[in-house]
Length: 264
Image 1 (cartoon, one colour):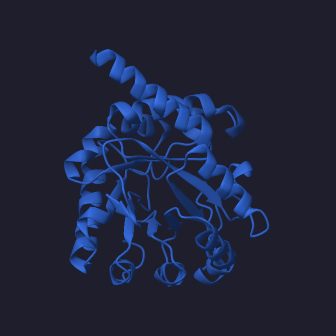
Image 2 (cartoon, helix red, strand yellow):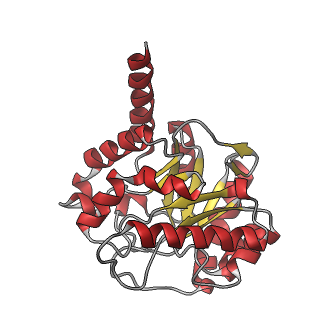
């Protein structure tokens, strides 16, 4: 797929989470305009391929802020990052107003946790700027019974919305939405069968980093996160969206080395 001036294929790449919120569940991921350049520089040096700026917490029980506050939070950091670094930048929002502001400032991708379904102007906005899109499955109420049919149906419909609005098919990636509208057991079922989402015809992004599906507290969830990253490599997932760049980059490299060794 294409994000900004880069093409990503035939590997598992790291998208680094840089939160611009005061309430994201993993405190180490929270940043402001004062330290965002340090955080991005560190992520780039550790091997991140894309930076994902988030100005809205989506942790369980979060309090939503509006587009105006999102823009206030990301405007200066996004401008600074685009001025200083040659790396694609994604902005995590489901408001078209925020997306427009981000794209005007040079963002390369919109990461929408509602898959273009929350704001009916989002698809056209992303298409207007010829930007990339990450479309995630979500739902107002928790899924029950079989998860695969509703998740795949949602993602197909979201991708169709994007393409109909004029978003380039080569600029779309899908996210199954682990941690959103799913029980712990359903999250594990989704993770273990993640390759099934490939039937939608688009590359996949996996977001499991330090999530509650692994139990315990966020500080204790790095090891299972890395296990899910190893699984992502086996399932040919294109991106993992993570807090811990260095550890995940190393895990991906080791997983590919193991695959190559097994092919000898």
